[in-house]
Length: 159
Image (tube, rainbow, N blue to C red; front, side, top):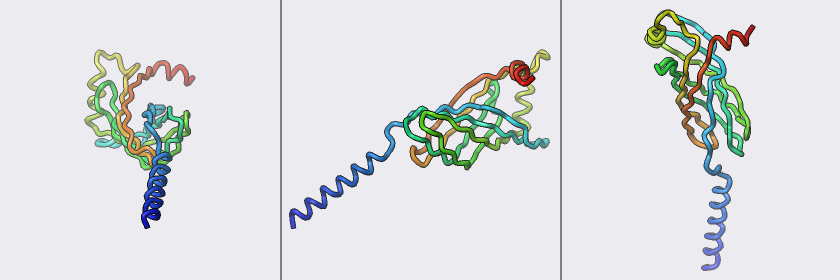
């Protein structure tokens, strides 16, 4: 009887260790950057944009993204919020895109217009995207990235 209990205990330990070995180790946070922004619908009180995000995975295992949520700032001012249940597999040491419906309100537009002083317009702007990716194999992963976009260069490149 004692030998049977010992064998069952050893078997249980082996099963637990095997389960733990299949779990990912420390996951490096992915880089999430804004790749493109398209205008959706625009009303007086609310505007809809489609923000294309690039997710870069620096890990040696695929990242199984089940959804994302984020806040987008332009020129250090809150601009829009986005959520998406879109699932995507970001390959190991690779990248993938997702497009997220994003919404801003009239106050966000007024804040941005208030930043256009001296008639200089918006030749460039800074952005910050802060949020989280929900994955099925690495839990919830926060991200916080910043970038710059020069509109003159983008317009020149498009010609």
